[in-house]
Length: 243
Ligand code: SAM
Image (cartoon, rainbow, N blue to C red; front, side, top):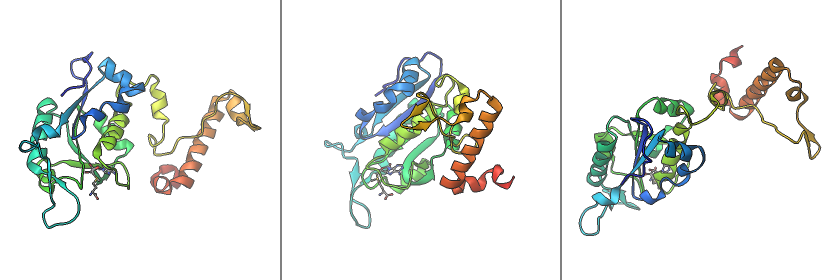
């Protein structure tokens, strides 16, 4: 099933998601920046309904875990057939499996994926998928954080959103991307807007000074302080720490 808008260019960045719940898409990806870009054909979205590849009259997709234990596991043969269908639509893109035990999603991974043709994403459910399909298809496992979701669909949306906003033409001013959190290995500095005084809290004077060099220096210091306090792991890797 395809939910892609008619592409405005020959080959938009393409996300193909294999899921038991295709009706969850585009969901939040259909509004605002990502939604506008989808309508403009900057990127395209397909969903593959894993249930279509289920076994028998009941289209069974899961079975009990070998060795016993709680829950159900998605069958390798069913998932593999769904991935065949996904790669028929999106053959040149990396195959990802959203998984809490995967490598943590970072801005670096989002940037790397934005430079490629797209992604094929497997969204798991139940206890997860049969390990053999992960090995057989060499799925790259990606986690969106150290917590467990009910399924991979929300995780897939998070990953897709993080990539789509980096595609050329999605965000108007490219400077706003360059200064965002993680782009330079730092968290972003604080923002302010009108009113000038709110609840007795003024905007810092330097931001109203019109002195662009001073403003840039202040923002830099703020970004470094925030990163040092809130994310010592990022700060430890940052060149400014050694300066
Ligand atoms: N039994 C698995 C475990 O303990 O690692 C959790 C399975 S979870 C209930 C079902 C599916 O949700 C997973 O197969 C995966 O696709 C998705 N999922 C859950 N947490 C995730 C996370 N933090 N990042 C990415 N995907 C996640």
